[in-house]
Amino acid sequence: MSLQKNSSSGLDKLAFSNRFVQELPADSETDNFRRQVMQACYSYVLPTKVSSPVVVAYAKEVAEQLGLTENDCQSEQFANVFVGNEILAGMNPYAMCYGGHQFGHWAGQLGDGRAINLGEVVNAKNQRWALQLKGAGPTPYSRSADGLAVLRSSVREFLCSEAMYHLGVPTTRALSLVLTGEQVVRDMFYDGNPQAEQGAVVCRVAPSFTRFGSFQIFSSRGEIDVLRQFVDYTIATDFSHLLTKGKSLDKELYITWFEEVCKLTAEMIVHWQRVGFVHGVMNTDNMSILGLTIDYGPYGWLDDYDPDWTPNTTDAGERRYRYGQQPQIALWNLVQLANAIYPLVEDVEPLQQALTVYNQTFDQGWNAMMADKLGFSSFVPETDAEICKELLSLLAEAETDMTIFYRKLALLDTEGKVDSLTDEQLLKPVEEAWYRLDALTEDYKTRFANWLRKYLYRMQKESLTQADKEQRMNAVNPKYVLRNYLAQLAIDKAEQGDYSMVNDLLDVMRHPYDEQADKQEYAKKRPEWARHKAGCSKLSCSS
Ligand code: AMP
Ligand code: MG
Image 1 (cartoon, rainbow, N blue to C red):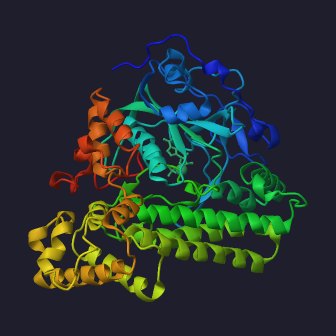
Image 2: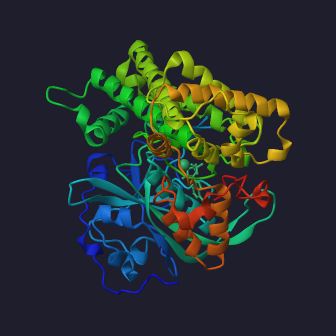
Image 3: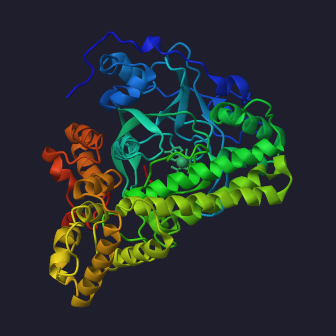
């Protein structure tokens, strides 16, 4: 399949207004070599030209948001621009400087080592969208790496960005996935097996790509003037609603802003926990200031509900970034951000106070989310705290598919009599969720049936019709998630030049809460062969 049919394109109609480079200090060095960059938020750098770009996929909704048509996306110019071969008038490419705590340790300068921002498009609705190529060649921040990305990790980033968006999870978006025609060598599990893989570039789209680490770097270097400039800029652009009449950029507003970051972060994590998403590398350089899911690397989706699971083999020992620990890690990261902005506030107490917003928002959000998942109109602490706790412990005890479980739970008859139901009758509707039904002990089945009884009694207080309840639950419990093995199957095909499954998955994930009768294949639980397969259950940072 070749998508580059048209030679004409409407790309020239994109209007750029690059506030980031206009308002923030630039690195005065413009040659592209690895270095420490001081007193600057970014360095000018051009993408590396490649031999033969081929568009593998594009997201038409993202294109439309920018003011591009599908016709534009199918043009030769589209491939050239979004692989980095052609710079449009108005673009002003640069790489951002940031630092970060990696796996709990301060790592110093990191920066856009393989991301190059093209500029900010202002669309017809006056919305500002930053465009960023990932994998378009080295920058001053590439350290010892090559600035490139391979097809497998680019498919994963492209598909997951869009899947998350359609699931209602705050995220950066992906416009396009383009093969470069170049080979890139990667040792996937760092075990002495380097292989040549196909290079690819994803164009990411977000209001901004600013990270917690974007502030940490200036604070760590004592560059407080730049820190202040960047915070002021961020509030004025990404949080302009805080700068209402009479408000000025002062300590009080910095605290209000930080509170808002705490709130947005908590909301994002509640969504991750709702859909079973495990980010895999929650370093502070991978935390968006806007509370968007950012940097899709060795992420994964829970097939069976296991709070201790992480897909990232690099984190296999400590499991710092496991599913069940994501809420605490987000808070830890916010504490690092608080430390970074302390020089602007010079008072610990209000920062500590602002941090409590995280726990409040998370706790409330998590309770409401669980109530939604279970079909309750609101969370009643007296009964529901126990119901949730018991359920999550049962789900973790026997291998149970999280996604399938909640969809099946919605099918339970909540209008009929509970007392007369046997354990077997109770368990029947959710049976499909267990990976090893025959391995369930009698004791476990009894306990699960008792939980279902308790749940049904609780549901009867809701006095909802069966149809209304199903609708309510299915609106928050996805039928389709980007299961690890599905993404891997799409990658295997794409590596052979068949991009159909990448595009099929993109399509399925457009309506993750709908039944989609012809797409049931994509809702199946993880097949046995995928249990321990690379890419399906374990991933590394190599990408
Ligand atoms: P990550 O763990 O992917 O968020 O990356 C951490 C840092 O390493 C960031 O500064 C990335 O830009 C950089 N990085 C990761 N992979 C590469 C690469 N292939 N070339 C250059 N820099 C990279
Ligand atoms: Mg990163």
